Image 1 (tube, rainbow over the protein chains, first blue to last red):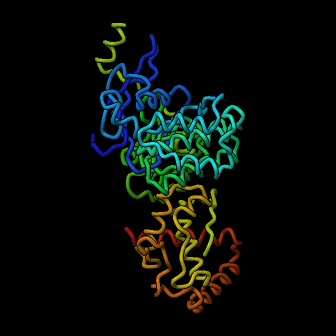
Image 2 (cartoon, rainbow over the protein chains, first blue to last red):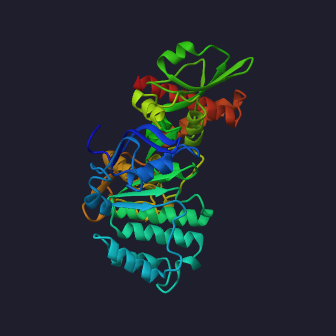
Length: 303
Length: 130
């Protein structure tokens, strides 16, 4: 694995009691990108993020962020990481001014001016209590606090899941403006696919701890096509292209394929497919057996 | 200054939509040589899209010689445009009208004509690329 990745996981696993929340997960998140971490509930997204920011420790394998370990290099690394947890929790009894003061005390790279200016632009007076804000406003405050750390890598866990469409748009707008200004790396998890194609440029699809699909979103969309033609056996085609999903009627065959080079064949009508359909096709594929390296099996038996 | 719009259902990649809109604005004379394009941050803020997408579009336009980036100032429409605007292709337009007329007389409706044009265009450029 290269040292240039913002985050890299290697056979990463986390067990709570007898339950593996994440198991045998290996992936890489590139720097300078906005990456979407997509997967169904229970895929291990939150666990992965918590491992990445050092909130919890791996049971097996390793995770590195910005080239270091979030445990061994915590003192140097944590100031460079921003994290907005699910439902953007704030100290509800604190006023915004108090939250900013707390941020300044706790963070060596704190940019108080940035935080104050952002809150001012949002029209949120310093005397307001966090608990009195709307969900959208709380999300914006949490984002402002995370950005005021001046992080190199910002991780967000389901940042827009609980927001209404307008608040969601405003939140993503704030986030992307910050990316345009500072060029920070962003990793955001989501089980909502809408918006992602616009907002993110890189995608990792996680299901049962395993990466089902990873890459540049544009390349992914460009590489996949829906072929519709007379009923046939796709074995020959599958030798050249990857068939992700197939369905047949008496007369017709439909194939969602990842094309390997040019796909132009008079026998098929070739159609473009949206990102959402592609992702759903990967998630619906039969799951490979969970990572079964001997190390994990041993750890499980030993428990 | 122009404003970009996105068609979320067109299936055309976002960066390509931006490229096409700049080209269209130049063809229509809405953008003149020396005019400034919106800054990356302005586009990001208006459309809520990834900054890298805007950068990619502007790079592509720069590569085609349609715009030039000036360090610290922004992106501007190039002073000399490489391809003539479509107004100068009157003869081709007239030829197309004639062809459309023939297609209609052959019994094709608008949808059929569009499909025929799209597949022929694709085949022509595909064979060229292959």
